[in-house]
Amino acid sequence: MLQPRGELDQDGAARLGRALYALLMDRGRVVLDVSGLTTSQVATLATLPSVLARAGGWPLARLVLLGADPTLTEALRLAGIDRALSLASDWDAATVLLRSRPQRLARENPMPAALEAHTLARAAIREVCREWDLDAVSVEADMIAMELVANAVDHAATESILTCTLADGELRIAVRDRAPASDTGLQRITGPAGDRRGLHLVASVAHSWGCIRHHNGKTVWAVLKSPPQT
Image (tube, rainbow, N blue to C red; front, top):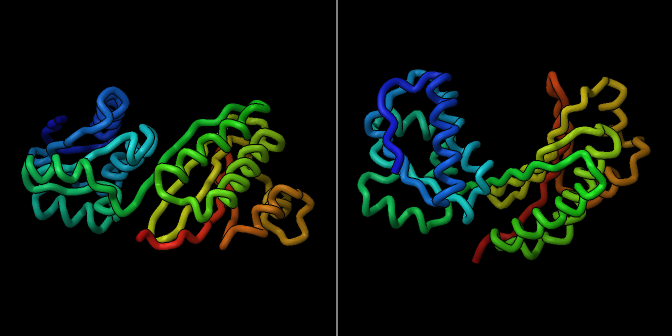
């Protein structure tokens, strides 16, 4: 159990994130007692699910919040964080929820700027599909992850982060690289007349896809529809 206390500002959120990540990597299952925690900045709470994703997410890393008061519970709900992290009112409920699958699953995998990156991406996405019961879309997910990571290596030539998110029957596969994206480059990536065969393959199997430009790179993403769990 981790028991932070006091006002959670940006600096405190960063420290909490580092401590939480270390515990998740070491123990795999953590109960975060937030009964003594307050915050006026809802954005600081976004640290929690992102740390969980970096640690591997369900079922490798599991996190339950314990003792949130009504104000904090409402803030978590408004931010959508209660879908990624279960909320418990007491210790017994927390231990049960550690064994329960959250509504929203996420996992991040760092990828090198090297030829073996696409092989690592395939291994990562296959593990995700197996652990998240996504056999029905595993072939398409495999191809998308490999192509997006290979694109980051071939064209961005930077390290990247492969992120998989599952919520509301949709598997979102995204690759974030560190190469600045010019307007011309974005048109080649997202335009229907683009000449990149790999991204055309992604477009042919994805329900939707696109590119988001950042000040220090870009994220190329694709969404697959996942059959409902039975």
